[in-house]
Image (cartoon, rainbow, N blue to C red; front, side, top):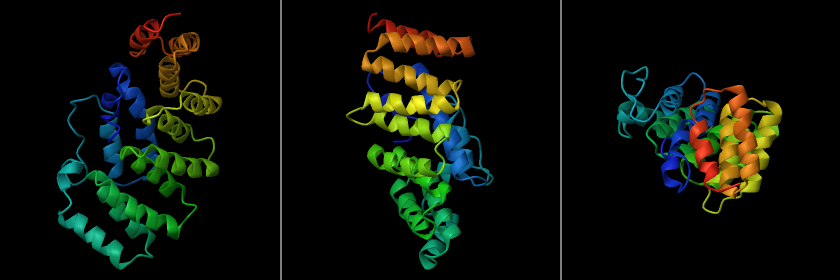
Length: 238
């Protein structure tokens, strides 16, 4: 499931926080595959629901390309013929990712990972792709490997926390731990604070949820998520 829609599948989470959940991963994606058309997808993922797609360099939306488009087929053919070509593996993975054929993207990203096991770019994108496939345990694995290289990447660390928050059997304590790690690096990271508030709320910890909202309010008093966060916290009592 793409992160654009993921909150709609979580009963009880706040619709007003959709952009809060998206932002961390949109930054994460653009860092993972710079200077490619995937960065256009990142821009679209951070738009409000219903906003027109930002066109890519080819003049259309990413999804409009389709698996049978000549560019896609050429990239896939090149990657299969040149399994030791790292850039070719990334190119094929990018096209599959754009059209949300995540299994295909994973196939080529795994091959790229074999060629360059320490490529941070590939590790993060594998995490993103498994995340968008709703395979949160696998996403956790790849995000963890990426963080072993860059432990202070706030966006990836926050996404790691989300894998624990969004999986079928949530681990709220582990999600909270990862969000706190992110905040050790950037105490004012609003999207992490929003996610932390949701984790506390889902856990039923109103005191810490209220304290976290207060931090958001002190940093960004006009943040549109604050009223919704407070409403949800009030539902669990004091």
